[in-house]
Length: 68
Image 1 (cartoon, rainbow, N blue to C red):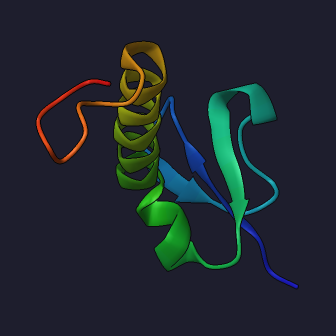
Image 2: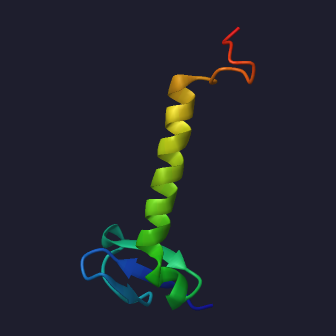
Image 3: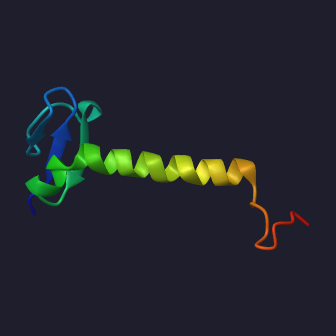
């Protein structure tokens, strides 16, 4: 099975034989998937930031407009 990584030092897709894993994201099942690694990280960070905001702020007001 082929696996690919995205190198954070060189901003390139690499096969198994590449930079050290501390400098890479992956593995990914295809070179195409690895090429979108930074986009996926950004999407996950936005999702997790929103989840953190919701957790920290608690539930919003009810539909009636009252908190109670």
